[in-house]
Image (cartoon, rainbow, N blue to C red; front, side, top):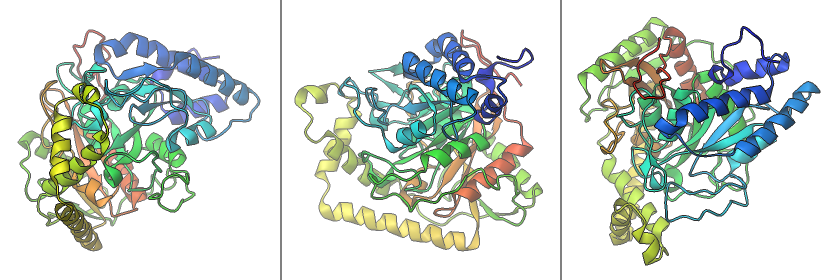
Length: 466
């Protein structure tokens, strides 16, 4: 069924795949086979996936093919392969959370995102790697080993959704569901040269509750803004299990993506007022922001005016880790990265007053940002202050962290590469619940700048192929 002139289906967007399915020029089985072949060839040196459900995915693709042949697709993503970070439950798969201390028993229930994707006929492909319980800014664990950057195997893809971002850059499936508790979608997206969105807090229902509480967001990583918006449309569907979920907004998040940004008031802050930034990163982000101005945005350099909230974040994070490890036996604790029990010990030592003080300071930060957005429609910053380091070197995303505290929508958009050939990302932050505005600006920037992609060299000597 595949057209003789078609490129490798593994290189196609979800949007393009669906159009070909509708015209019966490509089948979901052929599309899945292309992805599985690429995983077989390229995943070993980069280690993006912990688990691929080959049999389950093929059965789902065959069922989708039959529906398309009848002209009766099940939903918006019928026959499109989607992966899940190994923190999210998928029925029938173990959720190992990157940890030797977890069970290999299959999960009895889907998380909300997986449930919605099944309803829409998606092909559930497998699990992408994460750091242990998603607690590091790099993607490596004793369970699954080291995940490497598609642009250079010596470097990290960031974390903790580095498996999803690496898979996206390598074309190991068009759509990937990831999580972000302190930059874990945006930082790997920037490090791997792909698009990642942390939606507004509560936009995508989450269950069961993460140890980090409302710092935790579920969102898409994809090779285009349009594909990410399509995935968001599906996974933002309602689910009664999340008490913090926003009221369901029945909309297609692709709507209006190409309306342009003329007249939007954009604040650009290289440093947020307190962070050092590598000059090469800063200059690249400067140029990207200038493109926004060329498109008609009203750009002004302005810091949001808050102090570094890292200490507030640390209190909430440590308390969450203490809750996570509560009840772990001595034997299970011995299997963990030592950083986790250390964080748990700090969390247990917190007083109720110290915890509530951090909660209050988090609220003050949210108020400060709402006031800031009375003047500005968007805030734009570098996603990362420097390029991704070599593997095994700790890495953080301080430009990203504040917006987990405030719950604002924030995305990372590719905006260039360093002289060393590693990607650079620009972070676009919107007011609370203004996910559509963030997507609009990201799409506008995407249209001005063809995103480079890494070469596909299984030996790992990767470089820009554009």
